[in-house]
Each structure stands twice: as structure tokens, then as C-alpha cells.
Length: 76
Image (tube, rainbow, N blue to C red; front, side, top):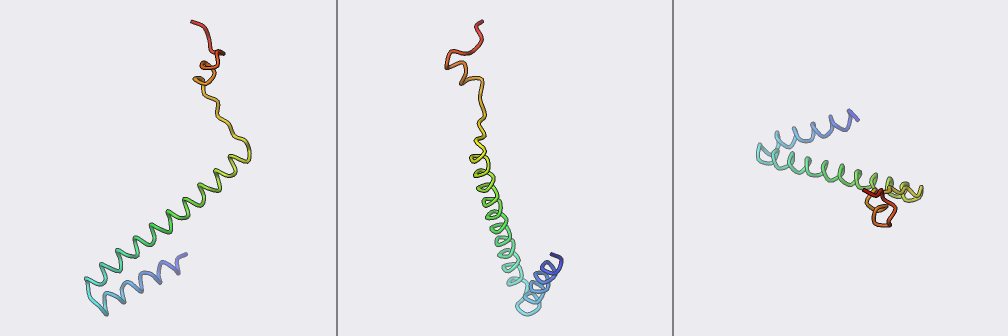
């Protein structure tokens, strides 16, 4: 992991040295967006996997309101 971070920093610094501050800011901004998109895609993938496991287990959450609507609730 540390190697990847170092490579990203090296590339950004080389962009700044070769192309200037404006190009550096643009490249850094685009890198942040790419990182955010990758993190979001991974979070979505994990959420789908978790949802499939929950559905496969038949996880049902019973709510008190549902029981009252069926007439099984407590009488006042």
C-alpha cells in the first residue's frame, strides 16, 4: 500500500515540476475524484454482497406496528 501512495505523490510532484502549479492542482483534484469513485464503488459492492447474504439468511425484522395491525397487539 505504501508503495502505491508514494507513486501517486511522485507523479503529482513530477506534474508540478514539469507543467506548473495549475496542472498540479488539476491533477491532484482529478486524483481525489478517482479515489472517491473507487471507494464508492467498493462500498456499493460490499453493500450488495451484504444484502445478498441477509436475504439468503432470511433475515426478517418484525416491527411492533405490524403485529398491532393484525390484531395481535396489547389491549389498553
